[in-house]
Length: 253
Ligand code: PEP
Image (cartoon, rainbow, N blue to C red; front, side, top):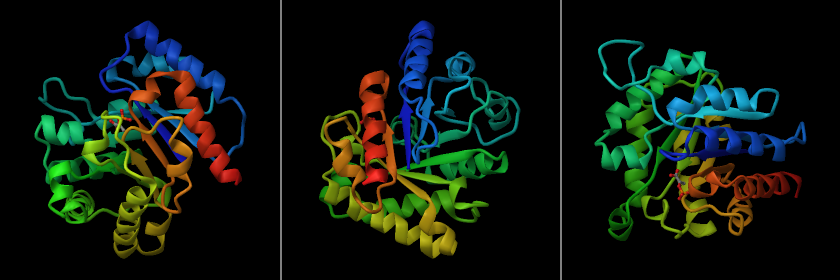
Protein backbone atom coordinates (compact mmCIF):
# COMPACT_ATOMS: atom_id res chain seq x y z
CA UNK A 1 0.00 0.00 0.00
CA UNK A 2 0.99 3.60 -0.44
CA UNK A 3 -0.05 6.66 1.57
CA UNK A 4 1.00 9.93 -0.05
CA UNK A 5 0.53 13.45 1.29
CA UNK A 6 -0.27 16.27 -1.11
CA UNK A 7 0.72 19.46 0.68
CA UNK A 8 -0.58 21.63 -2.19
CA UNK A 9 0.43 25.31 -1.89
CA UNK A 10 0.73 25.14 1.90
CA UNK A 11 3.56 25.44 4.44
CA UNK A 12 6.40 27.89 4.83
CA UNK A 13 10.01 26.72 4.83
CA UNK A 14 10.27 26.07 8.56
CA UNK A 15 6.86 24.46 8.70
CA UNK A 16 7.67 22.17 5.77
CA UNK A 17 10.92 20.99 7.36
CA UNK A 18 9.24 20.49 10.72
CA UNK A 19 6.35 18.56 9.19
CA UNK A 20 8.69 16.33 7.15
CA UNK A 21 10.88 15.60 10.16
CA UNK A 22 7.84 14.78 12.29
CA UNK A 23 6.38 12.43 9.66
CA UNK A 24 9.80 10.75 9.38
CA UNK A 25 10.02 10.34 13.16
CA UNK A 26 6.52 8.91 13.47
CA UNK A 27 6.98 6.37 10.66
CA UNK A 28 10.30 4.98 11.82
CA UNK A 29 9.32 1.31 12.15
CA UNK A 30 11.11 -0.44 9.30
CA UNK A 31 10.07 -3.11 6.81
CA UNK A 32 6.36 -2.64 6.89
CA UNK A 33 4.31 -3.18 3.78
CA UNK A 34 3.18 0.41 3.53
CA UNK A 35 5.13 3.03 1.64
CA UNK A 36 4.82 6.64 2.74
CA UNK A 37 5.44 9.69 0.57
CA UNK A 38 5.10 13.45 0.92
CA UNK A 39 4.68 15.90 -1.96
CA UNK A 40 5.65 19.40 -0.80
CA UNK A 41 5.62 22.54 -2.95
CA UNK A 42 8.50 22.58 -5.48
CA UNK A 43 10.44 25.24 -3.60
CA UNK A 44 10.69 23.14 -0.44
CA UNK A 45 11.66 19.86 -2.13
CA UNK A 46 15.35 20.18 -1.39
CA UNK A 47 14.87 21.16 2.25
CA UNK A 48 12.32 18.41 2.75
CA UNK A 49 14.65 15.90 1.13
CA UNK A 50 17.30 16.86 3.69
CA UNK A 51 14.79 16.54 6.54
CA UNK A 52 13.80 13.04 5.32
CA UNK A 53 17.34 11.75 4.89
CA UNK A 54 17.76 8.34 6.51
CA UNK A 55 14.00 7.87 6.88
CA UNK A 56 11.63 5.60 4.96
CA UNK A 57 9.52 8.50 3.70
CA UNK A 58 9.71 9.02 -0.05
CA UNK A 59 9.57 12.34 -1.86
CA UNK A 60 7.14 13.41 -4.56
CA UNK A 61 6.36 16.53 -6.57
CA UNK A 62 2.93 17.95 -7.32
CA UNK A 63 3.34 18.65 -11.02
CA UNK A 64 5.77 18.55 -13.95
CA UNK A 65 6.13 19.95 -17.45
CA UNK A 66 6.19 17.46 -20.34
CA UNK A 67 9.44 18.83 -21.83
CA UNK A 68 12.98 18.10 -20.68
CA UNK A 69 13.91 21.79 -20.78
CA UNK A 70 13.12 24.93 -22.71
CA UNK A 71 11.49 28.34 -22.67
CA UNK A 72 8.63 27.51 -20.30
CA UNK A 73 8.69 30.26 -17.72
CA UNK A 74 7.65 29.07 -14.30
CA UNK A 75 7.60 25.37 -15.18
CA UNK A 76 9.64 22.52 -13.70
CA UNK A 77 11.11 19.61 -15.69
CA UNK A 78 11.21 15.91 -14.82
CA UNK A 79 15.05 15.75 -14.80
CA UNK A 80 15.05 18.53 -12.20
CA UNK A 81 12.69 16.54 -10.01
CA UNK A 82 14.75 13.39 -10.45
CA UNK A 83 17.88 15.32 -9.47
CA UNK A 84 16.15 16.41 -6.26
CA UNK A 85 15.44 12.82 -5.31
CA UNK A 86 11.76 12.69 -6.18
CA UNK A 87 10.29 9.24 -6.66
CA UNK A 88 6.70 10.28 -7.43
CA UNK A 89 5.01 13.05 -9.40
CA UNK A 90 1.32 13.85 -9.01
CA UNK A 91 -0.15 14.29 -12.49
CA UNK A 92 -3.60 15.47 -13.53
CA UNK A 93 -4.81 16.58 -10.10
CA UNK A 94 -8.36 17.90 -10.42
CA UNK A 95 -7.28 21.34 -9.19
CA UNK A 96 -4.99 21.56 -12.22
CA UNK A 97 -7.59 20.11 -14.58
CA UNK A 98 -10.39 22.39 -13.39
CA UNK A 99 -8.67 25.58 -12.22
CA UNK A 100 -5.78 25.62 -14.69
CA UNK A 101 -7.40 24.00 -17.72
CA UNK A 102 -5.25 20.89 -18.09
CA UNK A 103 -6.67 18.55 -20.71
CA UNK A 104 -6.58 14.75 -20.82
CA UNK A 105 -4.06 14.95 -23.66
CA UNK A 106 -1.73 17.26 -21.71
CA UNK A 107 -1.99 15.00 -18.67
CA UNK A 108 -1.05 12.08 -20.95
CA UNK A 109 2.07 13.92 -22.14
CA UNK A 110 3.10 14.42 -18.53
CA UNK A 111 2.54 10.77 -17.64
CA UNK A 112 4.77 9.66 -20.51
CA UNK A 113 7.44 12.19 -19.57
CA UNK A 114 7.46 11.10 -15.92
CA UNK A 115 7.83 7.46 -16.97
CA UNK A 116 10.61 8.31 -19.42
CA UNK A 117 12.61 9.69 -16.53
CA UNK A 118 12.12 6.66 -14.32
CA UNK A 119 9.78 8.44 -11.91
CA UNK A 120 6.37 7.18 -10.87
CA UNK A 121 3.29 9.18 -11.90
CA UNK A 122 0.46 9.36 -9.41
CA UNK A 123 -2.23 9.85 -12.03
CA UNK A 124 -5.35 11.50 -10.59
CA UNK A 125 -8.77 10.86 -12.08
CA UNK A 126 -12.23 11.64 -10.80
CA UNK A 127 -15.62 13.06 -11.68
CA UNK A 128 -17.36 16.25 -10.58
CA UNK A 129 -20.63 16.13 -8.62
CA UNK A 130 -22.53 17.23 -11.72
CA UNK A 131 -21.02 14.38 -13.72
CA UNK A 132 -21.89 11.89 -10.98
CA UNK A 133 -25.46 13.19 -10.72
CA UNK A 134 -25.83 12.81 -14.49
CA UNK A 135 -24.72 9.17 -14.21
CA UNK A 136 -21.51 9.89 -16.11
CA UNK A 137 -18.94 9.19 -13.38
CA UNK A 138 -17.60 5.95 -14.86
CA UNK A 139 -17.47 7.33 -18.38
CA UNK A 140 -15.52 10.37 -17.18
CA UNK A 141 -12.99 8.27 -15.28
CA UNK A 142 -12.58 5.91 -18.24
CA UNK A 143 -12.04 8.89 -20.55
CA UNK A 144 -9.43 10.35 -18.22
CA UNK A 145 -7.63 7.00 -18.01
CA UNK A 146 -7.64 6.65 -21.76
CA UNK A 147 -6.36 10.19 -22.34
CA UNK A 148 -3.55 9.70 -19.86
CA UNK A 149 -2.56 6.11 -20.55
CA UNK A 150 -3.04 5.49 -24.24
CA UNK A 151 0.30 4.37 -25.66
CA UNK A 152 1.80 4.00 -22.20
CA UNK A 153 3.60 0.89 -21.03
CA UNK A 154 4.75 1.11 -17.45
CA UNK A 155 7.80 -1.12 -17.12
CA UNK A 156 6.40 -2.70 -13.98
CA UNK A 157 3.21 -2.36 -11.92
CA UNK A 158 5.08 -0.29 -9.35
CA UNK A 159 5.92 2.17 -12.14
CA UNK A 160 2.42 3.65 -12.09
CA UNK A 161 -0.01 4.73 -9.38
CA UNK A 162 -3.59 5.81 -10.06
CA UNK A 163 -5.53 7.93 -7.56
CA UNK A 164 -9.31 8.03 -7.79
CA UNK A 165 -10.32 11.40 -6.38
CA UNK A 166 -13.96 12.38 -6.81
CA UNK A 167 -13.84 16.15 -7.16
CA UNK A 168 -16.84 16.56 -4.86
CA UNK A 169 -14.90 14.90 -2.05
CA UNK A 170 -11.69 16.92 -2.29
CA UNK A 171 -11.27 19.38 0.54
CA UNK A 172 -15.02 19.27 1.26
CA UNK A 173 -15.07 16.93 4.25
CA UNK A 174 -17.50 14.81 2.23
CA UNK A 175 -15.82 11.43 1.62
CA UNK A 176 -17.00 8.85 -0.87
CA UNK A 177 -18.47 5.91 0.99
CA UNK A 178 -16.21 2.84 1.03
CA UNK A 179 -18.72 1.22 -1.35
CA UNK A 180 -18.58 4.15 -3.79
CA UNK A 181 -14.78 4.13 -3.67
CA UNK A 182 -14.61 0.37 -4.19
CA UNK A 183 -17.07 0.50 -7.09
CA UNK A 184 -14.97 3.04 -8.97
CA UNK A 185 -11.70 1.35 -8.06
CA UNK A 186 -13.04 -1.86 -9.58
CA UNK A 187 -13.76 0.06 -12.78
CA UNK A 188 -10.21 1.46 -12.78
CA UNK A 189 -8.75 -1.96 -12.00
CA UNK A 190 -10.64 -3.56 -14.90
CA UNK A 191 -9.50 -0.79 -17.25
CA UNK A 192 -5.85 -1.24 -16.23
CA UNK A 193 -6.07 -5.03 -16.55
CA UNK A 194 -7.54 -4.68 -20.05
CA UNK A 195 -4.80 -2.20 -20.95
CA UNK A 196 -1.73 -3.75 -19.33
CA UNK A 197 -2.70 -7.39 -18.77
CA UNK A 198 -1.40 -9.02 -15.62
CA UNK A 199 0.68 -5.96 -14.67
CA UNK A 200 -2.52 -3.87 -14.54
CA UNK A 201 -3.82 -5.95 -11.67
CA UNK A 202 -0.96 -4.86 -9.43
CA UNK A 203 -0.94 -1.11 -10.06
CA UNK A 204 -1.58 0.64 -6.74
CA UNK A 205 -4.97 2.39 -6.69
CA UNK A 206 -5.24 5.19 -4.15
CA UNK A 207 -8.42 6.81 -2.97
CA UNK A 208 -8.31 10.57 -2.37
CA UNK A 209 -10.96 12.94 -1.07
CA UNK A 210 -11.28 13.97 2.58
CA UNK A 211 -9.48 10.91 3.95
CA UNK A 212 -9.09 11.42 7.71
CA UNK A 213 -7.94 9.23 10.60
CA UNK A 214 -11.54 8.30 11.39
CA UNK A 215 -12.52 7.08 7.92
CA UNK A 216 -9.22 5.74 6.53
CA UNK A 217 -9.51 2.19 7.88
CA UNK A 218 -12.91 1.55 6.28
CA UNK A 219 -11.73 2.90 2.93
CA UNK A 220 -8.46 0.93 3.02
CA UNK A 221 -10.35 -2.27 3.88
CA UNK A 222 -11.89 -2.29 0.39
CA UNK A 223 -10.26 -4.90 -1.83
CA UNK A 224 -9.26 -2.49 -4.61
CA UNK A 225 -8.19 0.42 -2.40
CA UNK A 226 -4.42 0.20 -2.02
CA UNK A 227 -3.86 3.37 -0.03
CA UNK A 228 -4.65 7.06 -0.10
CA UNK A 229 -3.71 10.42 -1.53
CA UNK A 230 -4.18 12.74 1.40
CA UNK A 231 -4.62 16.51 1.12
CA UNK A 232 -5.71 18.46 4.20
CA UNK A 233 -4.89 15.76 6.75
CA UNK A 234 -1.32 15.44 5.41
CA UNK A 235 -0.52 18.88 6.85
CA UNK A 236 -0.84 17.52 10.37
CA UNK A 237 1.84 14.95 11.17
CA UNK A 238 -0.28 13.22 13.78
CA UNK A 239 -3.33 12.90 11.51
CA UNK A 240 -1.24 11.83 8.52
CA UNK A 241 0.64 9.18 10.43
CA UNK A 242 -2.62 7.85 11.95
CA UNK A 243 -3.77 7.34 8.36
CA UNK A 244 -0.49 5.54 7.63
CA UNK A 245 -1.14 3.40 10.71
CA UNK A 246 -4.61 2.54 9.38
CA UNK A 247 -2.94 1.28 6.20
CA UNK A 248 -0.45 -0.75 8.23
CA UNK A 249 -3.32 -2.32 10.19
CA UNK A 250 -5.04 -3.20 6.92
CA UNK A 251 -1.99 -5.03 5.64
CA UNK A 252 -1.71 -6.91 8.91
CA UNK A 253 -5.41 -7.82 9.19
C1 PEP B 1 -6.23 16.04 -2.72
O1 PEP B 1 -6.27 17.21 -3.01
O2 PEP B 1 -5.52 15.25 -3.39
C2 PEP B 1 -7.03 15.59 -1.58
C3 PEP B 1 -7.34 14.33 -1.49
O3 PEP B 1 -7.41 16.56 -0.67
P1 PEP B 1 -8.26 16.34 0.69
O4 PEP B 1 -7.69 15.13 1.39
O5 PEP B 1 -8.04 17.60 1.46
O6 PEP B 1 -9.68 16.13 0.28
